[in-house]
Amino acid sequence: MKTGLPSSFSLDDSLASTSIHEHMKKMSNVGVNPSSTSPTHKESDEPRWSKRPKVVKNFGSDFITYNIENDPVTFKDAMASSEAKQWKEAVKSEMDCRVFNGTWELVDLPSGCTTIRCKWIFKKKLKPDGSVDKFKAKLVAKGFKQKEGIDYFDTYSSVARLTTIRVLIVLTSVYNLLIHQMHVKTAFLYGELEQIYMDQPEGFVVHDNKRKVYKLVKSLYGLKQAPKQWHAKFDQTILAFCFTDIGGVDIVLGIKLIRSIDGIAISQSHYVEKINENFGYQNSRVAKMPYDSSVALF
Picture (cartoon, one colour):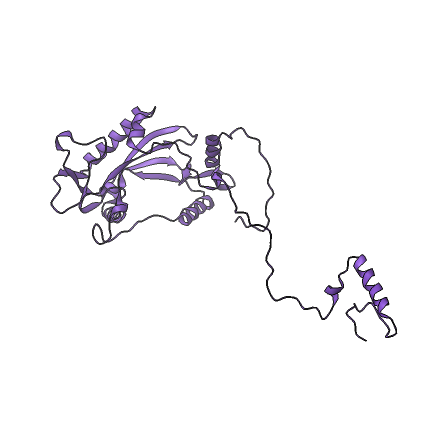
């Protein structure tokens, strides 16, 4: 006689049904579910769904990448700030560069043509110790409003990949070489440009010619074709530009280089410190966190 009991129990056919019930009762008392041990028990093919309510994960505002700089966003903000004097000098320097390089001509807008707008970008250049080195203002065109096939045809940007920069840092460390940064002043201004018209920039509108516009002769930051034009001009007259030797490399693209006898280490601790300072956590206590060993950091 076959039963649904485990093989550890052997029953004779002479046992009465009451004996079976006694064994079943003993099994339930010790926490064994008789139905789970039955070979005839069939599990359901339907998936089991959790009945617990799902809670949407919320990482808070800290999950969003934070802009650590407190630079003015608009021209009015810069002129109304406590550092208005420095920003005025930066804006004037930028306009002087445009005029010196012959970036545009003040003309009447031809019939049937449209203009693109421009805006000011303000940025503080910092020294390695975090203090302000200089105030920079850039006049950029709103190239995102340009339409392919109408305002431009070809674009190209000759930008080094971060992987390439890391390889160069490794080679520098292996062969014990020096690293220096070079800067091309107003690089995009050297590229020749096709026919494009732009509104006069805020703060520098010619009072007697408010209705006139600038016909761009040289490339401007923000234009779709500006990188391509700059690269073409760069190939022709690379040695004719005014290169500035910034000196030994300390920070490259937001990455700090720390050189020692053992090699070169890269970090962004200054970025973390700046965020802590802006949120008022610079004097907070350090707390240790458990590390997930399954995550590969390198």
